Image 1 (cartoon, rainbow, N blue to C red):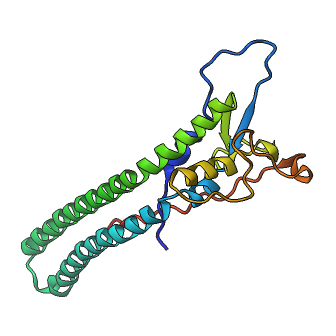
Image 2 (image 1 turned 60 degrees about the horizontal axis):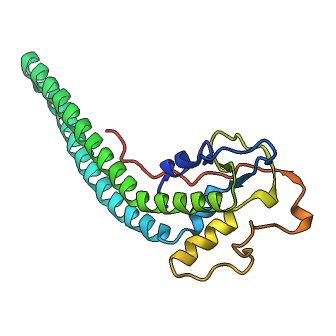
Image 3 (image 1 turned 90 degrees about the horizontal axis):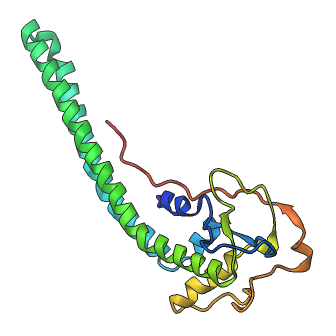
Length: 219
């Protein structure tokens, strides 16, 4: 199934969201992390945006298929008649096929660019909403930085699961969209905590990133 790549979503969070305010020497450095893959799956509007992109991407792919079929047909016809063509006619036809190939490649690239632009257009409001919620939580609880456990860099190797604010981010995203928040999410007055049995440092495996969207192939 075709899915949005959401590459820019992780880019917003790759190095964390830093607090601009200066800290006193006696204040401990507060850190937290999120799992953008988990948040993205629960973000209101994501499924609708993905469905829209799938539908429109199918239209782009259909145009690519038409262009590819036209070029393949021209190549097949040349191969069928090349034996009876004069050397000059054969050379001219080869040049025409080369030009047709260049035009086809250019048109396919334009379709790829349009698909990418449309994907970014659909993703932008969701990314902005998630980023705003994370920044609001960071400021509310005075976190110095918020890291992404799903970042491709894999910088976050181990962390206390009590520092995972993903449930709180999901709660506020869904509350903002008028959806009922999960019952397991802690009240927003304090940072979310996991059960004591999970509070010890554990190795945080970087989950797989959402599969990248299908791109129209080059001819």
